[in-house]
Image (cartoon, rainbow, N blue to C red; front, side, top):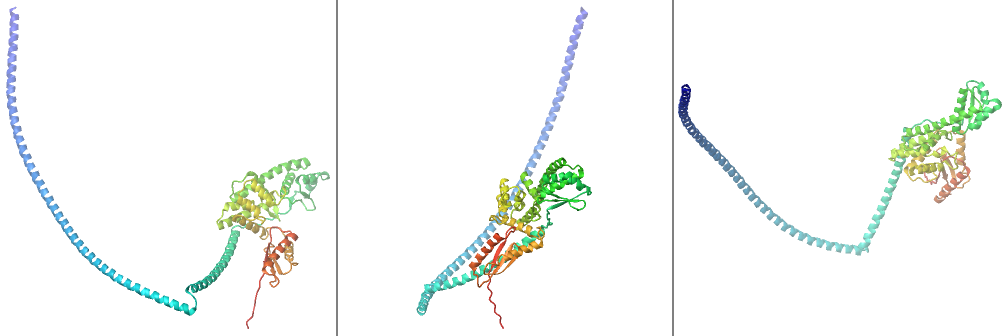
Length: 517
């Protein structure tokens, strides 16, 4: 028990000693820290004072520098103000000088106005005196001539008017002559240029077609037993089959090129096939007719493609293709229509007209010939009906109606088509006509005027398309010449058969000649 108490006492004594030691140590540390803090505070105060002195010095230097800059700027501003003041002073002196100058000018102008006023007054007085003198002179002249001023003025104006009218008439006549010459020259140049730019081959169609045979034995097979094959061919195709002594050839004769073409293809197919009898002939004829109809459409499409035309009804294209199998005086109708379309397009381009519309009218102008053998009426009337049926433009319809002069042309394109139709039909070789028939027609045309009194001579020109009649001037006056032209026209229409139109020109000329010796 004593040991425990002793132990406890020792523990308490140890704790007390430890606490005392800790207190002593803390006290020693506190005193040293206080001394250090005092030293640090003193050092800080010294540095603060040093910094304060340095900042004060820097502030004084900055203030001094700012003061120097301000002084410098003030000096510069003062210099600028002095310079501006001097300029203003100089400008003010200049303005004063200008004011003096303007005052002097104003004084000079006032003086000049005064002088001008005096001169104007003197001129007015002189002009009044001159007017009085003129009146006196005019009065004296009127008394001497016996004519008043108004009458003299009227006489002078009438003379001037007469002279001016004469000069105007002469000027107009000269200009008209020049215009006529220029128009004729331009027209010839356009026609020649158009014909040069379009040069197509001449194509004449015949009325017979020759079919070659492999041998002469084929003639007997074509004729058939008791002639049944040849009768069948002629009955179905509508052509005449001529079999003569010509070796290895037969001739198909017909005025219808379409029938002749179908018969040719049918006969050539029969010869290649070898089976020639009426039933086979009918079969091949039907097949060939369909193939030819397809060719007709191809001919129409090729013509449109060549001319660059579009928007045609398929039925109208087929009618155009049929022109390939129609002829006019030996001239292929489709070739002629294409030629007219090409020429019309070129002339329309020269004149500034619608080229496409001119080509369309040229291609369609003879469209009635494609079916004129199927419908009653002239090819012109039929063509107009076809154009109206397929809603063609009014210009195209008028071109069809007027290309032979039956109807008045209402557009430039209609006139162009008529000209190109005449060019295509009248050029040498275009139509199949013998020289003998040509000369006979010209002679007949010239003889038409023999029985009409007052006619001296007559000449057929332009390939028989124009008749020029020269009358006797001592027997026929100007008015009678018109009657003679009408009588000749009526006689030609009554006695002659001719294609197209014939122009009658009556010429009456008086010539007075003298010979100086």
